[in-house]
Length: 247
Image 1 (cartoon, rainbow, N blue to C red):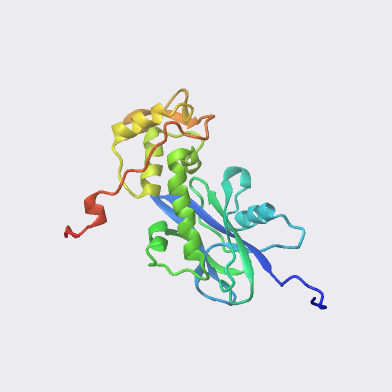
Image 2: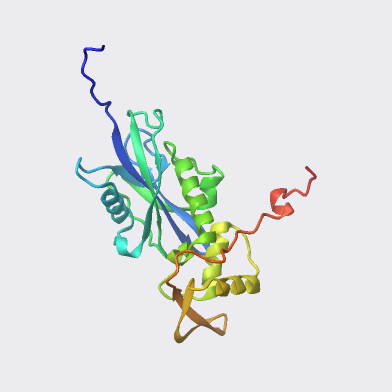
């Protein structure tokens, strides 16, 4: 029998945020430039340690969100994404991250937080492709967040979180195209959206002029689960093999 009393290992806890929005019709993710070691000067996802040992994790996520976007949480869709706790993910020691996904329409230019020297929106594709290298394991976290959003668009009303309070079906289609990274047939999309009862509901008789033609306005409906779902189209052979070469 071991005589030494057991003591818990030192583990630090952080929250990291995958913040997504649409800018100029493209999906973007927020990154900050780290102002402190480790990885000083490298882009990373916004986030940080708990303020104190009694701060709730969700409260910490809301706090970091407010610091990085200057938006109240009521404007933003925020949900827990996953927990990342590999022993070697942070050179400072054992650090566990509770990552969150945050989505809102038309987020403004960001302001760097307390431990960052700069903050900016970058296209999601630049993160997914590795064109922009992120500190720690943040590329994996960002990729997981983007893929989670892509999948959730199929079965839930998450797409409306990218839209203003009132929107047109064309604007909703732009969300799906930007997040999925593929063009959609307009008539087919309209039919599928209308078939998903309770997904969106018309706003009276108000209409918005788009491209010279008035378009009906909608808002998010009461249903959060889509039935039937809007399934993401499979990539075409050209997209899978852009050089046109045979496998």
